[in-house]
Amino acid sequence: MEDLVRSTSEAILHCAAASGGAAAGEPVSRHLSQLKRILYGDPMRSAQHDQALELTTEVLKTELLTELIVNLPMFEFECRKDVTQVFSNVLRKRSGGAMVAVDWLAQRPQLLFTILGGYDDPKVALNYGTMFRECCRHEGLVALFLPTAPSRHAYSLFGYIESPHFDVASDAFASLRELLTKHRPLVARFLEEQYDDFFACYHGLLRSENYVTKRQSLKLLSDLLLDRANFATMTRYITSSQHMKTIMVLLRDPSPSIQFEAFHVFKIFVANPNKGRGIHDVLHRNKDKLLAFLNNFHNDRGDEQFSEEKKFLVHEISLLDHDGREQDALNG
Image (cartoon, rainbow, N blue to C red):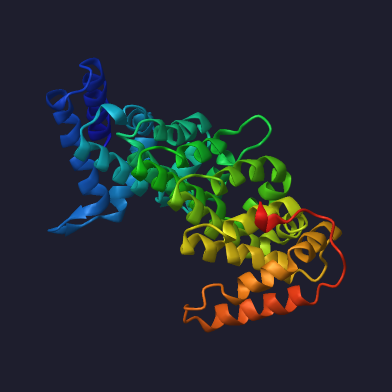
């Protein structure tokens, strides 16, 4: 195992010195195939746990994992796929109950940020995205990704989601969803502490010109607000009349799918039994328009739960009984 790890590292250094290329990368590809065979097995033989763990131990004694991550862009397509598979397998290995590779990676946060920054290069963005989501399986690594005062790396995901490359944008959004939904208590604390900064970025996605980005962002927002772990964030969010106006505008989006997703966020504002004066005023000011709008909203949808929710909103809005002083949000 030690010889295989050393020879793989030497092949990577040789490939880097030769500035990549198919010929220079052939030894790297060959060695990666051997690593994969030990970690995953092959059609003729299942992987042997002891051998796979021994290989992982040898890999972590060196900087091979670092070399694979940093040099990923110079490898050929199939070789890059092999790197992501080796990375994922090694990261899942346990030794004596400990996630040894996770602990190793947690000591190298800059390497985590290199993985995230891989979205800058469309050629390798999906490979790095796969590795990023593998990291998101582990709470200790997610804690390093989530922004703190000195570290705001994860906010770069919002920029990647607006990439002109559809596959990169979609992959980056999948990574954002994984980051925000995998470890709920940790994310709940983050959302409370970073509330203003987070939603300033997040509402940029709701204003996106990209249909997919808007629809996915509304769906994720609804999921986050309705998650019990995020109760404190939800109660703060639904006190903002400006946030509600943003969602009300999206109710009028030309896309029926975006309208539908916006409805599921809007209902949280209306269902709140302790509406603040600002929310109450906006709803009352728009009362007649909202009732007319909801009565004709997606009536062709054969969804009993949606119909019941819509009836509930109509009932709640019809009960509003004092004069509002806010502008007509539905008229923009």
